[in-house]
Length: 96
Image (cartoon, rainbow, N blue to C red):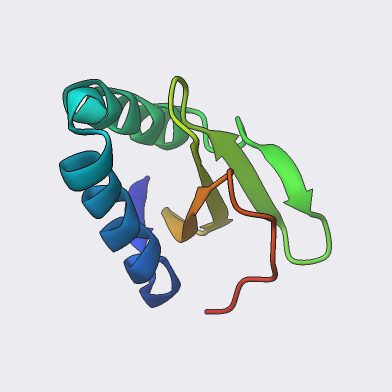
């Protein structure tokens, strides 16, 4: 399995980078560690995330000890990251 970050996740990635570089710098090292651990979990156990949107087969995996979660779907041998969602914001529809 291979992780692919879709275009719809780019703003989220930039927000996470900004947050841990400018607002909560002390948490940056641990956040990166937990993000990488969550990526490995999805690669090794693609269905680990709870079903977020049954109709679109989108799953959500909370990244431990952060306020972020992956919204993703399995597409063949790829895991497509749709959003790197900051859970402190209210959920909204995502687009690709």
